Each structure stands twice: as C-alpha cells, then as structure tokens.
Image (cartoon, rainbow, N blue to C red; front, top):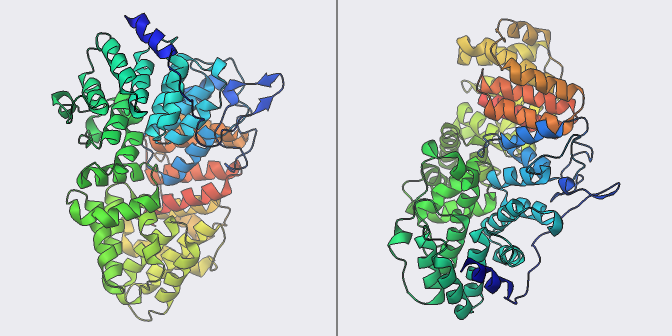
Length: 543
C-alpha cells in the first residue's frame, strides 16, 4: 500500500512553482560546491567573500550546530543571520555530514530565518540535496508561508522517498488546489501508514469538505508541526497555546521561533497568543518590527497577558509630552526586565523622535536616549542630550548628560564631546554617584568599550578601571579562541566564537562578555557591528 502512495504521488501532474526570493550561488574552481550555497551575496551581507578563510570546516559546523535558537543580542542575531546565509567558499577540511550548507540552513531556521533557510537550500542543486535536506527545505518553506515552494519539494520527492512527510504534503497540495478526489485518495492510502498523527487527518478532512469543524485530535494538539500550522492557517483554525519556554525540549525549540513568527501573523490566533508569539520572536531578533508595532498597537488593549503589549498600547495612546515620555520609559524598562531591551527600543523609536525630555527629568531622558541609540538613532539622541544641557539646575541633569554623551560616542565611534580628563572625571563621578560599589566595574567596562570602537582611554578612566578585578569576566576557554581567531582575521570563525562567548557561555559578567565580543568584531573589521554591540554592552552594564 505504501508503494501505491508513491505511485499515486509520482502520477500527479501539477505545475511546480519556483522558489520565492532570489537564490544566490557561488561558482568555484571545478564547478559548483554545494557547501558554498547561500541566500545572500557577501556584498549584501557586508561581509568579505573569504570570511571562512583559515577556519576548519568540522569546527565551524560544530559551532554552528551549538548555537541557541534564541539569541538575546540583537546585534549578534543580525550578524548570525548574515554570516549563516551568505554564499561563500566554505571552510577548509573534509566534507561534513550533514553538509556545511545544510548545517547553516538548519541554524537559520532555528533562529527564525525560515525564508533565508529555504532560499539557501533551494540554491543547492536538486541532485546534490539529501532527503534530510529536502525535509528541512519543506519545513522551512511552510514556516516561510510558501506553500507553493513546499509543494514543489513534495512533488520532487514523494515518489522516491520513504519519508511520509512528502506524501502527506503532496496530499495537502491537492486539497489546496481543489482536487479533493486526489486528496481523499491520498488520505486513504496514508491512513494506515501514519496512524500516530490523527490531527493531520482531521485537518485534511476539513480541507476536502468531509467535515466542517476540527475534531478531538486537533483540540488536543499541543505541539503542532509546520505542516499542521500551515493547514490550520489555511482553514482559519486557531493554533494552540505556546509551550512554556523554560520546559521546551531541544527538538521542539529548534523550530519554535519560526513557528512563533507564523503564529504572530495568523489572524485566526487569539490576540493573547499572537501578542506572546510576536514578543517572543522579537526578543529572539526574528520578527518584523513594523508589523509588530501595528499588531501591538491594534491588539494591545485586547491581550491582558502581554505586558509589553500593554505598555506599548499605553505609550501610543498617551498624550504628547511628559505622559508619553514616562509611558515610553516604562516600556523600555519592561523590555529590559523581560530580556528584550533592543526589541522594545526598536518598537518605540518612531514615537520618540519628536519628544523632548526637559519636562520629564534627567533619569527618564537617559532611558529614552539609550532607547534611541539602541534603535540606531544617535543623531536624534543628541537632541535629548541638548535638552539635558538646557536643564540648568535640575538635579541630576549634568550626570545624565555625561553618561548619555559617552554612550553617543560609542555609537558614533567618535567623541561627540571631548572625553578628556575633566569629562572623564565627570563621567566617573556620575556612575560613582549612582552606585559607588559598581563604579569600578563600570569604569573597566567603559575602558574596554572605548578601546573596542577605537576611542582613546583617558588615564583617569584607566586608573579607575584598575580597581576592578577582571579575572572572572569571561571564560578563558571561550575568550582565548575568540581572541586567536580575531587576531588571525578569521572573520566567520570570529563571529561564531563571539556568539558562543555571549550567548552560550555563562561564566562572568554578560556586559563584559559583550565588550570582549565587540573588540573581536572590531579587530576583524566589522566596525559597525562592533559599535552596536558596544552599545548593547553599555546598556547591559547600566552605563
């Protein structure tokens, strides 16, 4: 009977749709190397074409496979996306299993970049793609909401593969195209082969019109597959609640961020689930900010479970002036406490541009200024700095101005105001007045960050930093390989080791780990990424 399924699949005549998006490939001496496949050209990724020069392929595959699905650093999440997706000559060394391209695609899918993962895999010649690679391509296409691409993969594999996912997908494709007779035939042939997925058959019955509502199996579905989610979306069946983050098995976590993106864009999902899915994806650096803004503003009042959404809705609804400024500052605080400061800053920065902080106090001005910098708005942050200058004798205004000016300098890679002896002393006094116990650690962090972005370190700052014991900042096992890779200008390896130091290692202070990573990125010429990462470190360290 299973052979009948394959025969049925092979006999289907349908138009295969081209994979969406532009697939980038790389011709090497001797022909195309599948390991070099990518979805982005090096120039578009702002990376060198030889970024894997000097790296060992097996080591790089191990580092890629060890990346977490949820990256807290927005800068490193973007850099990971570009590094993994780029079309470039692979590292030296023997071929790995799975292949280097498949390993990168799997990591892209895990961090929520389903479209890039599918485009990368589609760039591998069909004759060179393994069955496992086609399963990955099918899932990536579904999570990228590209049913046509998923159907094309299924049609190419169903007749020759023993994996039921292709025959199941092909049956769904027939239902989507309106050929219920073929879909029902496929369902009948599949039923005995896959008795452990009753939810699939209930959804398929809905697609063919055999039933009008989901049954018990769909209602009991806790962890839907990409195919389940695609079918539910097509039928306007609400997806189930999201699984808890703290108890998520690794095999589920590898696809969960991309699933959350899909659910956040699903109008049939409940407002609470959509808001939670959107915020989770934003925290992981894997969501569209403009779409999320619109979603949060539209549904914030309808989703009491989404604290960040509530803050966003309140901030958007507040009157201009102090009320809105305070509401936005609270939103940034909510994002920071929830591990999503960069996401919160990106969300709110369109509402920050026209506000002035003078009537709101220096502490809120500093918070809003940090938010503007994190969202990539250093020029607008200067307006806030000038408002602090004009605050006259408002308590704390000078200290807040000193701290904000130092942050703007990190973001710009040049001092917007001289950071000589008196200015450095004023900055040290500002952080010392905030919390004397943490002042040496903050001075050491600022010294590291200024070096990382190519700024001079005043003697007064270096002296204050010497009072801080730096031995426990980072794991030597993680730091030394990073420093070695960056010194040798091994760009791709430096990016991966920076990701591991910040996102995988837990030894020492996270702000200082971010600073070490920023220094390494600067060493290999990734100056803009280094500046953004230095700013993240400054916010993390409360500078």
